[in-house]
Length: 93
Image (cartoon, rainbow, N blue to C red; front, side, top):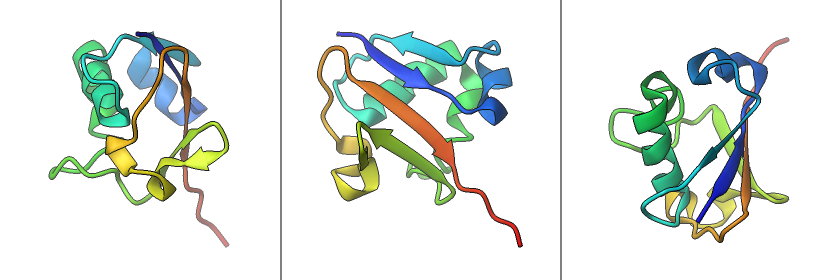
């Protein structure tokens, strides 16, 4: 199973400057994709999840039009060919 992950500009340096990476996770979940990303790009995972392994508050991950927080979070199941979009929250004023 392959899943695409689209990365925002701010995270690309941690993934070899790639705009999109394709992974074959051992587990067909968002968490499984993140675990695979950690193996391929170690510096990327800690920017996505905290020390307890939970999705960081300022990171939004979309599967299609749905934020995975509104689904099953890191346990959200994935299918072959799915694509995740990672978007960090932007604050300012």
